[in-house]
Length: 81
Image (cartoon, rainbow, N blue to C red):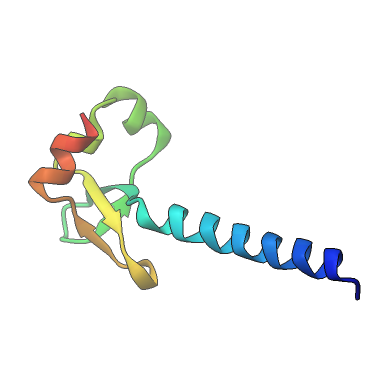
């Protein structure tokens, strides 16, 4: 492999790594509603349309590592406004 091709491959690898870390640094928002029995279910699109500020309400959850969702903190709710 030539030196230029090696450098281009290395540069592409670093770019992919940088893009991955940027995407994972931002919170992944999720809208979850209580079904009445204590279970949290994903919101429907109709709910999101009827409640456009769901990110600043109690329906706001953040997806963490492993797919586990936790309720948004007050700071995250304020940042979503």
